[in-house]
Image: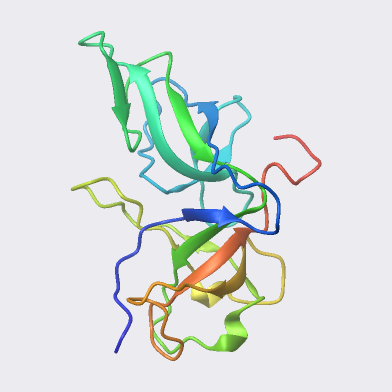
Length: 189
């Protein structure tokens, strides 16, 4: 049976190791009127402005977006959304799965058969236009960047999802950790 082609970004699935796993989310700011849409489970990065923005291929990643809360500037009502779309609110709070030891599940964009030897290699992400119906990320592991060199993600296993765990087929879901993590580097932004 072939793997299902349904990207969903970086889905947090639990921490590595034997330490306590509380699946906590940290709060970060997004600049008012930022024009970049950040979809649910999109990778995010720190900015020099002291805020976060959508992550991109190459460079450090902070984690994945799990939603935002702000006061709607038109209705003046508290608003929750699973994504960020341009809004001119000064109190935008983004909730991010940012633990440096968090494991994530992500679909590979490989069109050929995946191999068990992909595990323990590194790869960058590739961003796709998010799903406009429910604002879910279409970020995938970019199989073309797979190597032993430094990259954004480290593959640590294959998903247990029965729809996407078939090694030897395209679009396999991998379990990864963020290899180039904003909270693990020693320099500032």
